[in-house]
Image (cartoon, rainbow, N blue to C red; front, side, top):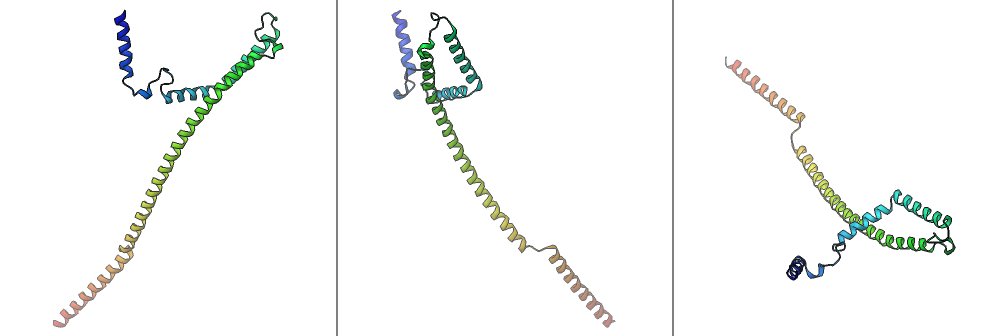
Length: 179
């Protein structure tokens, strides 16, 4: 028995040696800030549903009806005390709900901030790409103006043909004169 307790204690200590001392926690649910954040988001998401509001309204309605219409001996939160227990329960629920909702909202703000930064970086890259492409298009247009157009080539070819025809005519005239 003592050996079993020692081995369990040593296993527990071995597992705890895997993490730095500052990160160790005795509460399983609160070991990770992210885990608590996810829990708070799920809690806030659940509290914002119509089913939660309908369920809470039904709970309060049943509570009020029972403690108003039941015999005085069976009432656990009588109307004569202005439903003190119900007020206490709803205050407790609100005191836990508000910080959980704020925590979920802060996490959403952090995610939005990261998303905005990523969008800004993406927009900056797109702007740089667009400017680069605009410069390339301008360079191509400038290069195209230096290139010969179809009309320029046709005019040059016509000029060469005319010169060749003149040269042919001149050779033919010189041959005719020689004969």
